[in-house]
Image (cartoon, rainbow, N blue to C red):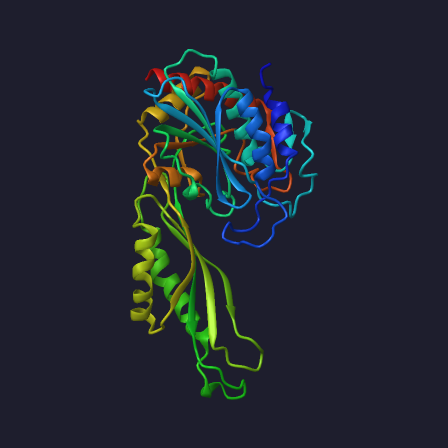
Length: 382
């Protein structure tokens, strides 16, 4: 019996797969992707896929499923992350997938269980087709905390030729996105009694000098980065912490920084190497870098076979392809850096991702199945 994409998405939404803490946090957590993995594995076995599981951390599985027709044939993979963000701020029941007015509501409907459901149904339809193509499904973990899971996924046993990464792109192909790098800058001072600030060195004042330089010099420099589809790289200082008590001159201050780099910018590790020295030269303040987390950007040739296959499938179903770029990160950036051609595609709007009333239009969901099926056929035949 064939899968129904609406009923399948409802089943997926009912599974609590929230991911609200870093994979590096080894403490107890309320939820993880284990239950989603337990749902997907028998489903894929029933579709005659070979199923493997790789654990990025305890109870943080990747599900890899392969329909192998011939080892000599290329592999096309559909990937969707199994985790969602939390329920904070939601104004609808997050795990009750209500269908009304042509939409389904619930956490993950758009980001990105809608893509997952569409991919699974497309694979179910493709598995009986006579195509010169091996098919793969990847259910990944730990995407919502900064694409932490896929760097710990090992695809080396399988010669994957292309990966369609599910995210809510309104059923349009995304071929480029920014890298992100999150980090803390820390400076120190010397504590003193608040009545004698001259006897100490105020670390907050030192950090304000650093922030002033970032705003006056470094942020405009980042904004000057040129890449098709982007208005430049960005930096935002999002948290500042310093001091212990109102009557003590603070001896430590830190800021948490979010940098988004266009694909043509220097790599995130190269940027950080030079940043502290530039700050010291410009401000006289010694800063250290801590708590770095980064995820690479994406840039795939618009004329690549994977993009051409998706665009042709979109045209086949009466729409006009709008190949684009986005500012947020996805697992596709990690795959791209690892050498796998990857493009981002899926039903739903990014405006609904993580929203108080997250939803997906059912018409988009059905259309995604059709486009993914046609794209696989086109990719197989060139």
